[in-house]
Image (cartoon, rainbow, N blue to C red; front, side, top):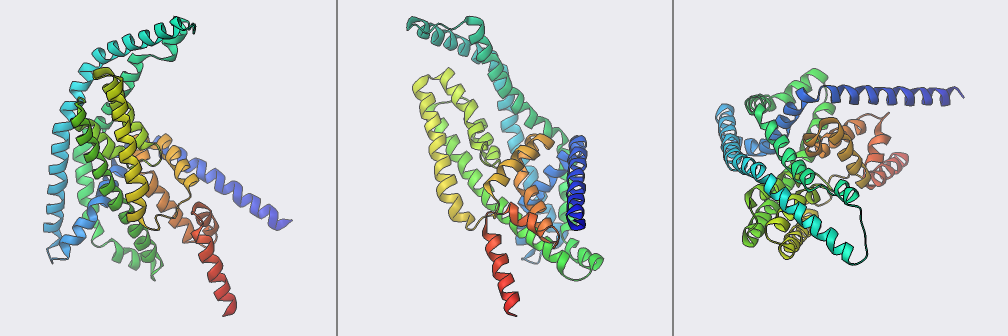
Length: 354
């Protein structure tokens, strides 16, 4: 009875701590988002830093090369995407007007076939202006993150500089190898995931850009870049990226071209997500699909669009942290895809034999 009460008390303490921590992170979102985005960028480029250091380059030189590369990519994206976003937002009233006309035509077509829909109800159910406005606001929200570009770049520089000696300092501070092994496991998992995901996302964005250019859809480069970034968001990112491009193709070119645009998104994401990504990712991250979806919703609610981008790395960090302690190891196992259970059972059998 005492043990059951103690377990229940620990559960209550854990639940209360979780709520307090999540609430604190949400309140500190405006400060944490630029920092976490800096960590995200640093994780992507840190393998490049390690590769440069393999040529025995001084740390300062290697970091300078990596930062120059990040700045160059950022300037190119900012120049191309920034102008496209501004032009698209200026064209939103025209696109909204065309969508309204198409909406009215659909309503008339349904009325001619005996399906009578109240005009007020139809307008409240499908507001073209709201749809295009939401697209423009979403694009602008990504642009607002870049207003902190100077702070983000400075933070990336310090993270990369600290990365050189962080492992040694952690080993001296904690003693033994457990902390360094935890950091090494986390780094390998996240670097592998982000490296493969970045390559898949780049190919996805490139093929989307080429397909939309062939079809003649406006702002093809913008939708390609959007497909690249949103592909980091698991499960729903690719679907979100397709919505504005399909709507624009519908307004600009017609129903047939909109169908071809949608088909292009479906084919590219099927090939990338179901063929290349499993092949390159191999065993993967050993995260349950349910955990992936819940983490997407949770981090998206706490930190917004950037939280959705970082949902997988953040969840990996939490999972590895749970697995590093015996008391919470079962939580890490429950977050896994099932492979951990077999490994633990095998280890327990080996321990019993010994």
